[in-house]
Length: 212
Image (cartoon, rainbow, N blue to C red; front, side, top):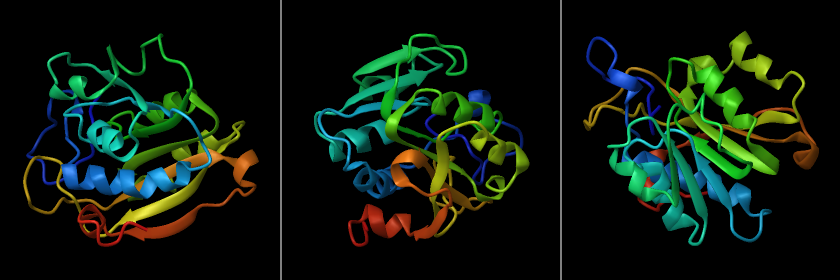
């Protein structure tokens, strides 16, 4: 599992463990868009990052929410992001048993098995919490992804479509696919079951020029 995984301008063939890392600027923008939606959760926020990788999402969360407690899951104990979490669980996110419930889950799940990772994450979401995932935009209307709503109190509440295609392979180039930040919420709390679509100019947000 990794901090990011979805394809950008990656070379032919898959990188081991789907290790496509979230760029720091994108991580900061994703956190800036997500944190204000968590204002109703008071006290120390319990956060899960199920694909730590380099730790860019975890670091951005620590900066935006001082005093939060971040649990990270990482399959590779040598990844530098393990040090960015308060607690790191080493193992495959789909198999680890020691997780509890969390106020916020934020991840860029691996493209291979993305639905399974989202489903598992939602199993650990606390009542009234939020779960936000970076996914390829063309996955949003697939039957398999929409089936995650069946029998749950969670529903995709916001889709923030990224302006520009980020690269997940450590370059400053442009990726090959469009991405969205999809945030799931408790429908009993929000009171609606529809997905509101917005745009997220992540480069501008990261520079602090457009963080709303």
